[in-house]
Length: 124
Image (cartoon, rainbow, N blue to C red; front, side, top):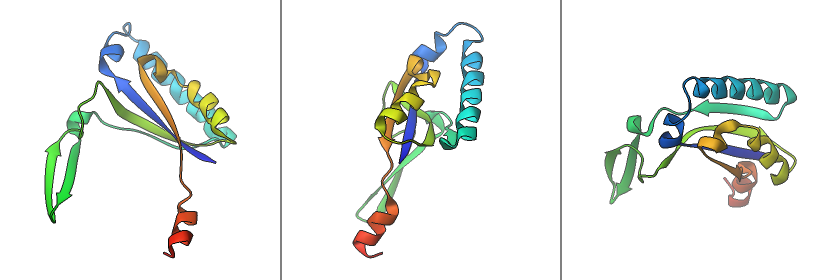
């Protein structure tokens, strides 16, 4: 099964880290990601730029409106994600817990829907 591991950051907690701790955590994260990739568990990973660089859009009555930043203001924001392969949710949670970012935000683990099955079901 595939799982999306979403890393939510809290700048207040990140800013409170001792000097150099973020870089140490990031280096460890890259090393862990490399090991998971070598095991075949980590399929892809990406970091996102800050919410200040984001745009959100809406379509209403065929008119698009664009807003700066994320749609909803929140203390935590999506900072990156990992696409992993795991046997089940328990294993996915174990893999996700090996990343340090739960200390400075939140990690959400969500199963990825099988789009081929959906495509087949709707006849597309």
